[in-house]
Every structure is written in structure tokens, then in C-alpha cells.
Length: 565
Image (cartoon, rainbow, N blue to C red):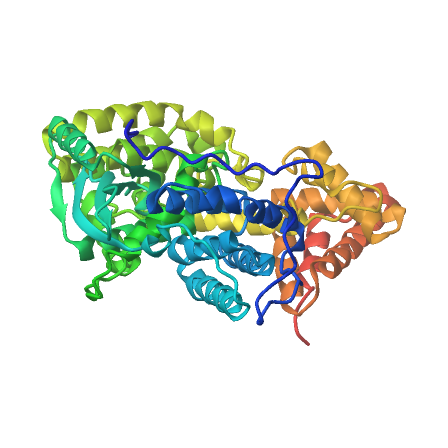
């Protein structure tokens, strides 16, 4: 939800140009920090922040000052690939740079960082500000400070409210505050996506808190839910969980790298986290088992068996029909952070966009069976756990998503698809597929693990398709060149690779595993197998027409490999 009456944004500081640009002074307090930066590449960012001190000090009130700090911390967070240790290092550098300026407005900014920055920044920023003030007093300097300086971070929590949609997927939390002087009542509005770990997905600073509350109440009634009060303790834990989930999981899985927060999200993030800390009444959170503990293997298997014993489950008595529910439960718990019994339009969309494409690895022969297997399970789940009036939208989304799924899976960039795409009926059990991947991955390693000779881009080698016989031959040739295997043996290794890929004869893979178990490397195993194949081919070529050794000669030689003396 976007409120029109949120707090107006504060303009970003602009760096002055030309000779009139104000340069930070190198004067500092008696305990000045070393000029060595943790992240020297951000020096110009720190300089711009320091130069904006006059803009900050001229802001009209504490709320605008807090939002200014939050906005500029947000710019740093948004551009930081590491929102953990890397971000903290940048903020500590910023504290040191502000202290080194020796300016009164920099001292005010340090107070702002102590109030609005991450909890780990409070002590360094506050201590730096205290040192600057002490140094100024010691030198007899009078420092003018904004009249609102002592109000930074000094707020009293007011009412807190929340509403949840009918599917338990989208939660909105409104928390209200007022500064100690009673000026500028305001609030924070957080949206949590419970179909994605309960992460915060939208953050807004609110000016008209009563207008926002009425809007939430009206929208909740329209959805068939209601706006309910929250205690400060409950609100604190809900917001803490929402922010923690966002920092851990972002807004979507790595399969959707284009999904990320906008600038407004980061602008309000530090402010909202700081306000959430002020809701903490020190009341301990009740010991609740984690989702993974609640849905351990026994609980997951029980839900699977409940489905398979139902008429809907019996109707899907196929290999894929038995595999699908266990997979979907695992994806709900482990990928989405969601109770597997709770489904809704957003949860299904997450399953089909964030989870399935990167997790469901199937041969082409099974792709057309996927819609029925998944539809059967989710339709049963909806009938068991959703009121009748809430099923229509869920089933509509399900039909649309499952219809497109075979095409989505076929186009999936999963590198392992090439290793199992051609497996036919009888080889669709999960253990069988894994065995195929192990065998074919041994002869042609996965992308990122392949040999590439000098002068050849490894990405070009990784792009080759091992399922294509000609490209598989190129992969073998490139490895032979990289390993400096004599050219006369290249054709032998190509034949060997085809035999292992097709598992024909099966004695070949058995021999390879025995050799590997003796401690030989993959390359040593392939060379030993190539020696046996080369010897067999030589005998075939040299033998009289009526004395050509048959396949059994080759397989006997393979059977002799890898046995301990």
C-alpha cells in the first residue's frame, strides 16, 4: 500500500563544486581516530556526507533529521553488496571521518547516526560525538547545535495495529510514535510477505497516522478481515522478524535476481528499524519452535501419507504423483519459510517462480505429467485447509501456473537437465535419476568444473551441451588438450565417454567406481579405462576376421579392474 500522506522526503545533499567547496578540516578532538579507512574506495561518499553537515543542521525538526539520516544510510545500504560486516565497516569509517572534521554540524550528524543507525553503531557514534563536544569545551569553543538535537531517537510509542489478508500471506503493521516534546506524531507502516519467510517487502514513514489507520481498516473489511490492535511487545517481535527475514532472504530467491527493493524501501529502513527497537519492552519472546522443527521429516511424511491415502492421492498413483507432495512440502518449508498447509495466490506464485524451476529436475518424458501431479495435491490441500469461498482464486492461479509449467521447466537453465533429459520410462525414480547424474557427471563434469585448455574461455566450454553427441566430443577433446593427453588417445576417450554416458556396457561404470574407491582421481580412472579400451580396440583391429574378440573380452577386462589383491 502506498500512502499519499507519508512524511515528505528530504532532498539529498549536493556536493559544491569549484574553489568554494567546503573541505573537511583535519582538526579533531584529543582522541582523534587514525586517518586510515577500512573501505578507502568509499572515501568520496564519506566526503559528500561530511560536506552535507550544514544541510542537516538546518533541518526544521527531529523527525526530518532522523529521516534525513535514514535516507542517506539507505543509499549506502542499497549500493552495498554486503549488508552485514561490509556495511558496518563503511559506517564506522563514516563515524571516524565525521569526527575528524571537527565541525559542530558533524557532531550533530554523529548524534543522528547513534539514534537511527544500526544498534552496533550506537556506541561508536555516540562516543565520537562526546569526544568532539569535550574537545570543543576544552578549547573554549562554543558550538551552536540544532534545537532538536536532544530529541533524536527520543520518542514514545503509541498504538500499534495489524491486519492479515484472508490467506495469511500479506500482513500490514502500523506503529505510531510521538517525540518527547509532543511534536510531529508519525508512524511506520510495514508490509510482511508470509509467503516469503515473513520478510518485510515494503516500508513507509507515515505522517497522517489516523488517516492510515482508517485506510487499513477499510481495506481489511473489504477483504473480509479486520484491523486488530497489537501490543508493543508483539509489534516489536513482528517487526524484528520481518527485518531479519529481509536481510537473510531479500525479496525473492536467487532465481529471480531482478526482484529487489526500491530506493524508498531503503530510505525508510534504518528509521523503521530504530523505531522498532523503541517498542521493545524487554518482555521475553515466548519459546516457539522454528518452522523447520515443527515440520521435521516425521511431520512432512505424515502430511504426504495423509494425501496419498485420500481419494485424490489414490488417483495420482504414479511415480511423479508420489514424488510431488514431498517436494512441494519441502519447498514450502525450506525455500519459502511457509507452513506447507497454508496456500494462497501469493504462495502458489512463489512456488512456481521462486522454488520449482530451480528444484524440479525431470526427464522430458515426465514433463507433461507434472500439471496433473501438482494440481492433484494442491487441490486436495485447498479443500482441506481453505474455506470454500477462498478456493476459487487459488485454483485459478493453480490452473494458470501448472499449464505453463512444462514449458518453463523445459526452458529452465538448470545445467543438470542435460544429464537426465533423455531418460525414458522406468528410470524416473529419484534414486535412479541421481545415479544417472553421478555417472554422466563423472565423465562430463558439470559447468564450472570442466577442463579448458589455455586460450579457451571456460564459459565457452561450460556452454557446450553434453547431451549432444558432437558437443560431448568437443568437451572430451578440450579436456584432453588441457590435460596434455597424447592426441592418438583422443578418439579412445571419445568412445569411452559415449559408453559411460549411455551406460553401455554397464560393466564400465562398475569398474570406474571400483577404481575410484581405491583412491584414484577421476582423471586417473578415465586413463585406466581408456588403456583397457585401447587394448581391446587394437586387438579387434589386428585380429583375423574369424578371430575378432567379442564384447565379452572387453567386459572381462573391465571386471578385473579395481579389485584388491
